[in-house]
Length: 163
Image (cartoon, rainbow, N blue to C red):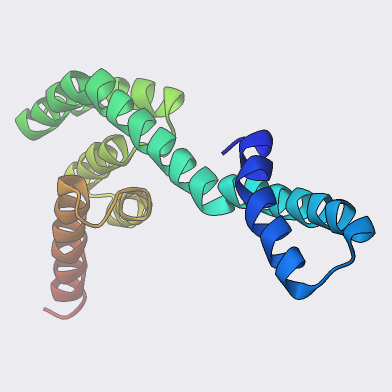
C-alpha cells in the first residue's frame, strides 16, 4: 500500500471520529491530518515487514539450490557411478570440481563421503556426511541417503572396534 493511498484511506474515518469526539473545529483538520499521516506511515512500515523479506530470501535460496542441483546433477551421478565401479580417482576429480564452485552443496558432499568410505577413510567420510546433512533439508533425498550411510559407517566402526 502506498503512503498516499494509506493516508487517503485513514483520513475520513479519523476526521469523523475526531468530530464525534468533540474536537474543536480549529484543531480538527490539523489533528486529523497528523493522525492520518502517522497511521499511513505505520501501515507503510508494516507492509515491508521482516517476515516478507525473510520469505523472499528463503524463496531466493531455494531457487539457487534448485539451479545448483540442475547444474551439477549429471556430473555428480557420473561421479557416484565411477566411485561405485572403483574408478575413485576420476570420481574424486569430478566431485572436487563441483565442491570448488559450491563448497556446501549437499549432494557433492555426499558423493565425496562415498569416495572416502570406498577408500576406508571413515572419519573423513563421517565429517562430509555431517556437513551434507547440515546443508540438506530434512525432507531431501540427499539427507536420507547421507543419514543412512552415516549410520552404516558408525555401525561398521563399532563392529570393527568390538569383534
